[in-house]
Length: 139
Image (cartoon, rainbow, N blue to C red; front, side, top):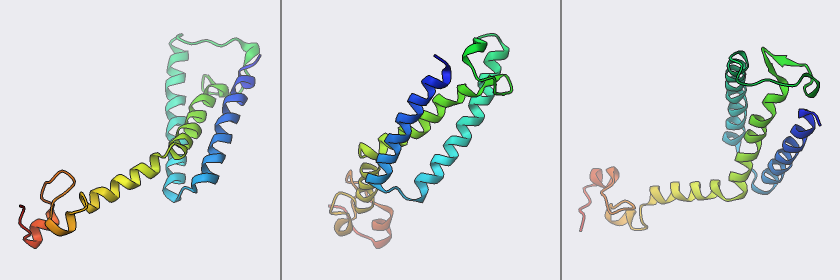
């Protein structure tokens, strides 16, 4: 079995999970920008560190298991797992409610503990800067 045979399995699963997450949760523009930035950053880091590890002799590859396409010393196959992670982790974040929980936490911080707009206390009873400006007194 070649590395690409294994990679297609992981990349395929990751792509399907991302597709399901996108169809179910409908992420906005920031999600897509973050995904692209992650692809670029992880690609650059993988290229740098894989080349260093191969040059140092830490990793070697059997020639008949790789495609022969390389970025520096690193075979193209090495980039599949980081890219699968870039697809899979944000997809799981969407599906498991991470975005919803984060949005709820932001709204809670804005509103305080439900009394924030009335007595100037934040989620933990601390005075908010807005309350200080309005001169609201704590109980």
